[in-house]
Length: 142
Image (cartoon, rainbow, N blue to C red; front, top):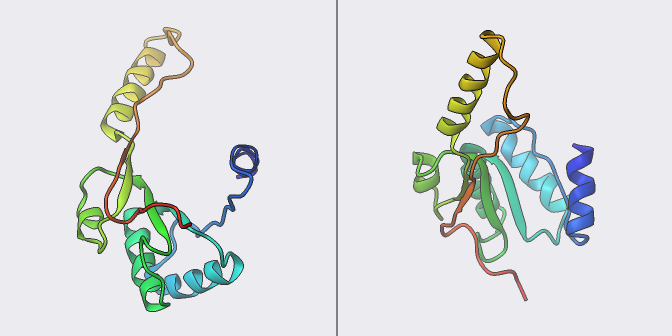
């Protein structure tokens, strides 16, 4: 939301943030891709909600004459490592490994402590995230 946009502006002043809604259906991707390219003609990278939307978007970008990663790099954010969509996409998707199993373990441990009436030891838990680089990203143009 607004906080993410402000952080992006501060850390990367030349970056733009454009949102393709999560839950976007396959039939909506062509219009979303055209709108993205019209609104941000100089965009060089996309961080996409999940593997499936990223794979659909890559296909549509190709139909619109864009090359991935030569013209645009694509990263799937809400992703599991080595899921079929990441590996099956051409080019294969770069994605974030968010370690959902570890997140679920920490959430359950916190929930059990709350049920037992014990205050949680920590207010925040941190899990390791990792960028899995594949062919959908390339060097920045220029």
